Amino acid sequence: MDWLLIPFEVSFVQRALVAGILVSVVCALVGTWVVVRGMAFIGDAMSHGMLPGVAIASLAGVNLVIGAAVSAGVMALGVTALGRSRRLSQDTTIGLLFVGMLATGVIIVSHSRSFAVDLTGFLFGDVLAVGRGDLTVLAVTLVIVAVVSLLGYRSFVALTFDARKAHTLGLRPGLANALLLMLVTLTIVASFRVVGTLLVFGLLIAPAAAALFWARRITTIMLFASLLGILATVAGLLVSWHWGTAAGASIAAGSVLLFFVSALLSFTWRRLSGRIPDPTTEIERSR
Image (cartoon, rainbow, N blue to C red; front, top):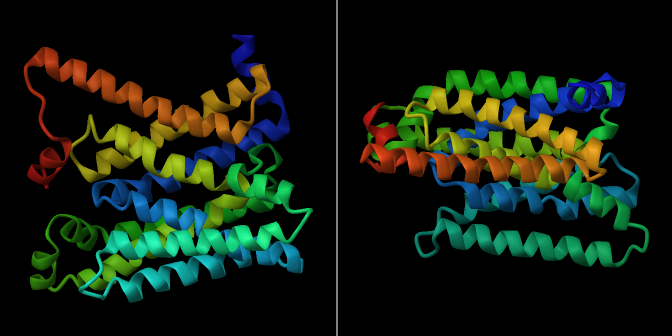
């Protein structure tokens, strides 16, 4: 059992584990809504659309989180504004903003010869270099996400399955949609400096998608997604320690691997039991 315990006796690995747990829970709460509502594309676009702000902040010597927040804010406002157009689908507007923001970031990066390391950190983060201040930011983010998710739970559920009914019930689906977009933005901005956009997006989508095969209720999906994210974090840190791989990438790969394992086990189980229902349909029936 030494191979399992020795890595976590080191202080920086312990901080990385705590950071991974916090990010896993935050991403599980927000990622469940992202997966159930089919918002994965906007999550990916938001995570990579922060590059211009991060690049400008790095070149100007400003805190990267500020640059990321400004860039993500521009992205969110653009999605909201263009989403009102009846001639363009939401996927089209998100795709255009995604490409535009990413291209702008690459252009800015190309003018700096010393940005390569920062770009690597932007994508993969440095979970093994997490400090106490980073843990505080993640803890505060978790509290905010949990409170908003709890207070807006009924509106989020109604918006997810029937926006028209939500409007009829006076649940203000427009506001609920804006709050969900805010939660996605907050999660990505608060986490990217610690774990990188690759890991944030991986933990945002993969655990919730894996949990969807086994759980029917939203709260149960969130719980399972949290546990799967934590499992991916522990496994990724162990792989990184013993095989010398990048910690952030190992955790992200672990979360995606868990999704495929979950999908395979679910398919096998349901095939043997003679029922292969649509997980989304089961969720809707269990509301």
